[in-house]
Image (cartoon, rainbow, N blue to C red; front, top):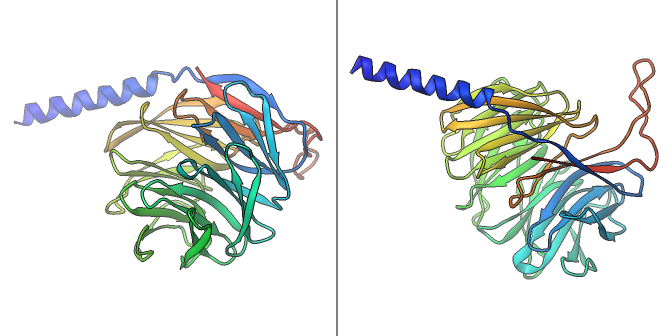
Length: 334
């Protein structure tokens, strides 16, 4: 029995080593230039219509994810952060941080349908395919607004006890969200809107991006102190902590490739391979560009998209200045 256990452990170790040595083959494929100015935050993929929605200053730029061609602009989204894609309703929702609203738009025409008042400084958002609701996380009011896409009304507001960042769904009725200022993950029920649990993050500071492997019930949370923590979504048990690059604000998980990608503002992506539900390894550091701190995944092509711009050389201790007219989307893949 001891020999058998030793053999299993040895083979598992070999497997992890081989994954760490095997490169992803990912690199910069294309750079899509967008002729407008302003800062940026999240971006989202509309798989059905092949569009990529990019928050940019006070508007949302839309490009075809396959060609890079511009397909439209959604204006007057003041301080926009996130874009939720509710494909089954043919609607999209932007979170407008400065006005405390969500802009509702038609996915086919990009025309604005209406405005919804939510909490203070709405930030991250997504459409939950289980409950068929849009989940909006409000930074300043420290709560979540639940929107019904059938009526475009707020059904509930859930106090979260801290400043929420990104959230995900397990596809079975549970929503998980990073709480930046308390260093934890909060889980709530997608239909009753009740808080179910709070997972304290040990060794993780100011969590931002969050992703999930629904098959293995694993959460991937990226933190300001350059680590990715991986937890059991069902229990909150912390499985491991792995190093990532500096300035990360986003993470995605590819369920086919079994790989988590953290977008690091320093100009890299950290690719972390899920060998088993209990074993994760840093597979590769992929070069991007400085400022590319958020990320979106095309689930069909497995390509990654990251927004950034060109910057002047830094002088002294100040931040480098963004070069006007240089906004761009990096496309990373094989």
